[in-house]
Image (cartoon, rainbow, N blue to C red; front, side, top):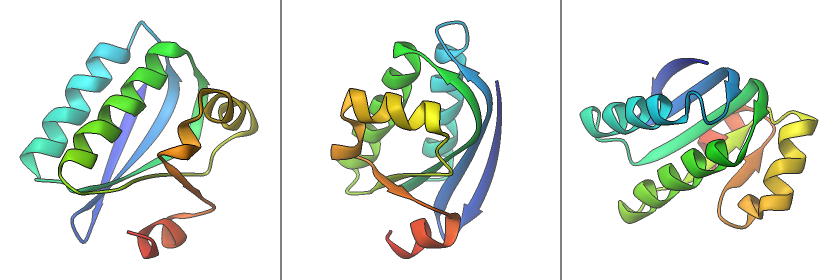
Amino acid sequence: MQLQYEMVDNILIVKFDGELDHHVAENIRTDLDDTISQHRIKNLVFDLSGMGFMDSSGIGVIIGRYKNISKLGGKVSVIHVTDQIDKIFSLAGLYSIISKHNNKSEALNCM
């Protein structure tokens, strides 16, 4: 799993490339938390265009970052959600707490 970071007006955009499963979840969690803390991020956009697979550990990573950002009064969004990941988000009820957008501009306008 590779992560690419982009900052736009103190909004962190994180692009996932690979599989978010129990093998990488802890490292991803630590890396995200460190980046969020270092840059004092309040709003977060996950770009899931490159995510091929996510298991329950991946759901935990997403929910955990949502909880941390929410405590700061911020928002979390997802963009470019693949069909497979969309099903997982829907079944897990993640869209009740995380907004889904079609692209980066749409997500940034809703922050």
